Image (cartoon, rainbow, N blue to C red; front, side):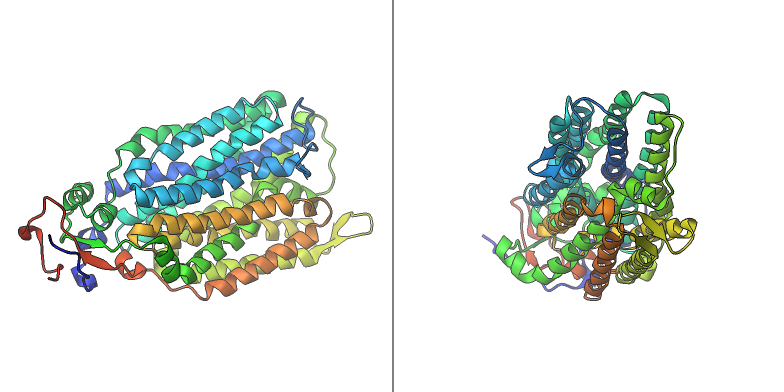
Length: 495
């Protein structure tokens, strides 16, 4: 029986050089599209629940009173955060499953959960069932983060890897734009009692489109070779891109305790950055409608429908301004690097939040006024969404898909993403009471959080233009599958 022996890693002898050096192909874009639909759904859900809450605030719908206390918390905060809370579970659970069972075996399961959760949410008979069904949706959304990101990362070539992973994530921007349009169309054409159900139900469509495609995506070459030690499966997967694997090696599988011991500092950086970013992004995102409305003078609308239309548009304005940030990030991430992009994003977010907070004045009866023209205040506020996307919202997604070894890559990403969703839940659930009367203090909190994010980012190591094995410190070992023979080995293996 041949034993497993450590292999000295050299990038020039990497068995994945065919994948690393290939130019982008149509197959990359097929994987890109297949992976993107989950994040399209995530962004659609982020915006659309804010629009649904606008309807619930403006219209008395039986069974959907937002002031109903649930465990001592107003129902509005629980509805806003229910999918976020279960996404934390999904990110960790599916991250572990993707490393333990493989990417292919579970890819598509999370999309099924998104479809079921969205459809059931649209049929919810009351606010309690809406919370439960959105919890199912959140479980699927959470599961999509580690699996889709890692699949794209492990199939990507080196020089375009950041761009490809960022483009997967940029579908969030398209999802947000679609949600704005669907929200406006629904409240314009349908009665409020039906509009919110249509808005939630349509969230099932993008995930439904790719379930079959996901089930057909081959196991990634890196997981097949490094974790399973199966050269034949690795080459079948590599042939999907038109290349071959050169060498028969595996990655020494670390126990969870050893993984945590070796990568704890990396986890602090990737998880901590994501946690801080999502405090600002989700808090200001889900409640973008009330925040923007706070900046605007009180308006009297001739009809309830017109009022809801205006509120939905105001809620969508930051997402529209932020949309170019996703694609600016994808265009530049492999040029300027992940670290610089994340650092400048946090710095600009902090500067804008703190500037806007200094322009807000609240009197004794909580009436908000401003020290600058309202147009200037709104522009400065919505610009934060551009720099979130052209910054940590993109980079915190990309980096965890690169810096962990293949046997724990999805788990590392899942833990980091779960930390982000924990920040989102903290912001939407616990900071919610500040929304009505302490908007100035809320913006200061977001500014301070962004400063801490910038300080944490300084500890990052740049990953651009490096192969995944070099970045992650992959510990390669000699490994022979049962069918392998000596002829399968190349100089990469050391006796």
